[in-house]
Image (tube, rainbow, N blue to C red; front, side):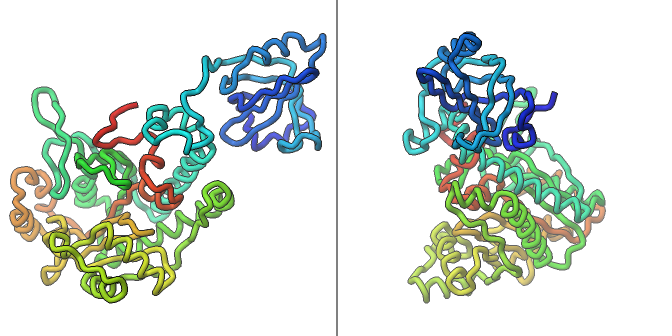
Length: 437
């Protein structure tokens, strides 16, 4: 028998049905008992009169604890006096499927009642919070829409290995693991294998999967393991094609979220989901530096010249919102010293971009260098040798012009709902000081 979700209960008035869920609350009064049961879609009241016929049910409810799970068989009635959705279930049978054995170690209904570390220690309870459940419903909708868009555009979904034999990319440290007496590493991204797929003739690919970064960073937006949504596509004319595609997929995905969850997001998070207009504002890095200095007195510190830092990202969003009324901005023309060796260059300038949303970078995208001889030279320039030999092989036997980008699913969700930290957004956060639960 299929589970009846509470959001659909109006279809079952005056019918005998079976529901299952958590016990949200219990009121045991002199002549009547009330239970509120919840599932992921809503809540419903169960009403049990105290009388000779209900002695067994009354005893069950009197000994029941909040947050236990129950299975209730009864008749669903419409009752305008019931404040909770104007309905109630009159039970014939109540089965306790699991009993909550004591007082909860935190009040999951009030996220401010416990520290974030306590909440993460008891994440299985913290996730019972209504906002947290919505967060993952929104994330599911977002990722599904991006996947749907890619499939409509004839992309193939691939699943690349996360155990690799060489430390793959410059720019981030990798986790080393033992592998049958040899060294292996957890993949920093699917970048190399996405490009291998294009060298094989797949033309357009995407992947959703785990990404590992051995960075000892404790910022609000970094994690040692997160979920990435990656895109790579062949036969582009320039990195502008990549930016155009990213605009399209984000507009599509945010439209889907707004349509399905816009109202409840506004109710629970106080956030208006904004579907951006196209094209997104685009600005060269040097021009941005000038605007930030002229408007806000900001000057990039020496070690970050040629790149962005967190302060510059926040000010870039402020500037673009004030000038264009837009939440997104593409930054282009970064220094080659600050970009990966596989980014194509034109007159020494990497053909790529960062995409900033609400003061935070969500994407580094680019046209990739597909010419073997040029790629070898750029790898040497970065001091990369044996570690990328396997990767360079992909380009020896013909590879189309191509480009792509990656999005951090958890970071996008964090910015969309303005939770303020990845710890709030991820199912189970992994950082330098957290490896459990």
